[in-house]
Image 1 (cartoon, rainbow, N blue to C red):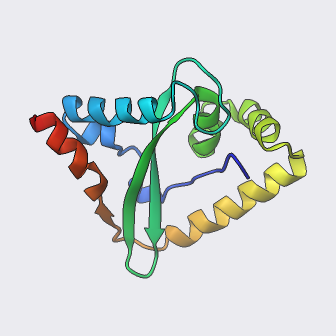
Image 2: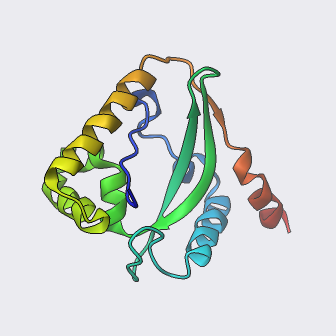
Length: 146
């Protein structure tokens, strides 16, 4: 699927780079993502206001949550990626429609993808002691110092 649902472990909710990093550093990181995307959503190609999204990998054996990159997404794609939060705000149906449009799939396929994401989420929630690796930001720290 071109657009995927990314459910982070519950213990990682409400924490993100934007709130954890100095504003100047976050600005450099997000603007780099926007520049790499050429001013359009990296998933659906929509132009306009973009949002920076952190892409994480999870090594369940090592209990390691690693920041892989930051990408530019439109609001609609970002709402799908964070479908759990989106459903809490009452926009779940809109996100489902966008998922189906971008992926060219049916509602049944959406629910299958959501079910699979929830299974991964449940498995990862059994791990209490995630170690976070944000070494990705090192290259940006150098730019802020310059």
